[in-house]
Image (cartoon, rainbow, N blue to C red):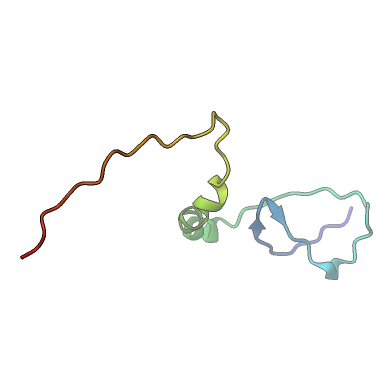
Amino acid sequence: MQAIEFNSHLEHGQIAVPKTLHLVEGQPVRVLILLDEVAGKKTSQAGDARNVLERTAGAWQGEHLVREPQGEYEQRLDLE
């Protein structure tokens, strides 16, 4: 077994493997994921806030949402 180390980022649930590794298509590999603990603490909260819309967009799986009638607009007095 050969061990290869490289740094990557998780994006959309995928980890990019550098093409410079010259792996053969379909070649079986064993993957071990080690989280960078120092970087993970700094970016996890920022990443959650930044990607919350990307992670939740289209996630509703219940009944179709219906917007109820909003009623009449408030009639305000004219400014003098």
